[in-house]
Length: 312
Length: 200
Image 1: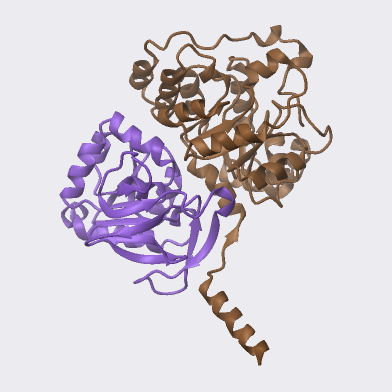
Image 2: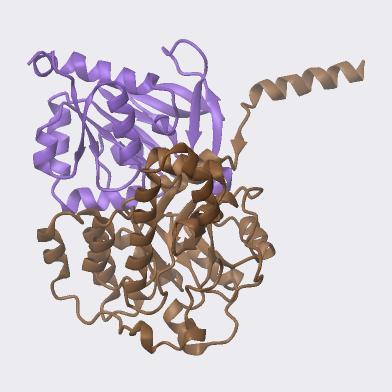
């Protein structure tokens, strides 16, 4: 008898509860789709996070140090202190991202348990594994990964990345690398869409990427996930340049809180990103911003300090 | 007979996905970024995105007033997720600016953070056939609905779809699915409201 009652109760509960499928590819890629046309800003304190949200950021990246400072201070850069991320999560209602080291799946597990909305497996931190990136598919939380070219982007997607960003050269305040990577990806996609069926296998071999993803890209003329530009954006015009070249949004790292007037610069970059195709708006928002962050000439950065070469 | 002109607010969010679904259904779909664009359409979809971002942008770029005017004249508007938040009268526990079109209180990120985002089959009143594939991403729910705002679907005992005359709001994202039924419903609404345009 008691068995029967248990069963009946169980069935009641099941009927009450609609089945929810969490962490599916659709909801992971879907969050990135909601961020399109927006600006994601690096922040290190709850105050900065609030400034970013008020300026119109679609998400913030919670960090202990912005890339420009990581570059300056050197040493091993790891996942940020949990308290730093938690306080930022408490301060804003927009999604909060955090960085894990390349290949450090336990940092990623910890960030997922904390409840961050997106994990950036990032070359800005010191890589934990020289051979393997994180297998991102089993995670419920979505991942964004950096890429310098199409092959790299497709390998990350094969591992489960729900969003791609160019690597650029983080903390440099110099847009040239990001533009190189963005153009590289778009021209390679364009080339793929001209190929015939028998050329796909060779293209997949050259790209070092799975055939079915290569076919999908060729068919749709775009990556199967949202693609942002990151690494070196310092001004509203930089952001609008990326958008006009086909980026779906921008990450701004050191560019905001290393500028003379962070609140105003943040707002200006947001507006220039939304109205990237209207030079009058970009002009208007670019007025009286004060000094942007200081930039670095890429050739002046010692080779071993270049971040974009981390990962493969 | 020409196709109904339906705009998708194109400041930020999943604009392309809505445009693609509308075009699949043969609507004349356009991006709306300015008051001028708004004057050219018979109906408007406010897509998914970030409500603090878009709410502020509507004001800064002079879209709030003309949009409210058009709604008073009867223009159909549908908000998905962020769109529904922006259309609501009030956001629970927040003073963020909204358009105050829907007589509802809406709670943001009500189901939790991203790890709680989910796909859920939904029963929607008035929609025949199989359950609708609900895609909920950091989704809001309707805390309370007043007057002529009617709840059309619920999840966990909370409203996730609302209809108020020519206005629609959904917590979920039909534009991320292959199911065109709610877009079809909205296009029908626009065709009923703007027969002179459609006959033109």
